[in-house]
Length: 332
Image (cartoon, rainbow, N blue to C red; front, top):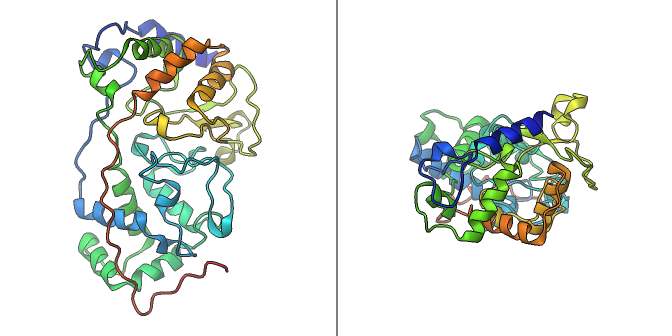
């Protein structure tokens, strides 16, 4: 009932989409605005750490392995492959625009990007290391020691500095200037008639009750399978695994729909291979509605207008290992 009331409120407040939005305040979705980083030196350090596989036990896995910035900030597989070829239990969410999320991970167990950055390093099925060992590796590399000292003004470097630097880099991974953003900002020619019809249907069906704001999602937890059961082979119980509250079973963080055409497969279990599949499933299990082929095509056309400028990242030159740097042990 709560979901339906929210959906009706958004539908009642929705405006026509025949012309460009005259003001973003009238729409449930806002354009992304890029803001300059507070500390560009910390961002550069965080970028190196994001791409550095030496934060993993094997020396082969970096943050970019599962959140590939050339692939929409994800890895386009149902669940990521981690240390010793372990397959993760859940689909890797995109890192792009993750700074807009209410929390990190599908179950929200990390409050922010800094807390999230430390999780994979110490997860035996992901990067397979420990925070202590990762810090030891970084402390053995003279250029990293010098750079951490310049950025943080203190020594020795620690895991809090590592995760903070990675988080500051990830905050820059926003994707403005999508065609939909241009329409929101007044460009009447930015979208086609089919795409505009898709947005009208997206609003009128109640999708904006959960997929709203600058990230078009990411700001709430909702039950997967609200009006009809969602059948999945995933064992994840979502938010329940954090709160242990029965009412939180199968509640997951609503994913951002920004760049969604790039971040397949979809849902926490990666079970929807295409956007058409995802729209069909969401209509049935969340809205109790079966979209026609034409309606599905219109919504998919709208969703593709949410692809913005992708991060233009120049790959960093990583500091060379020192003589005393622990060597990777990929088969331990």
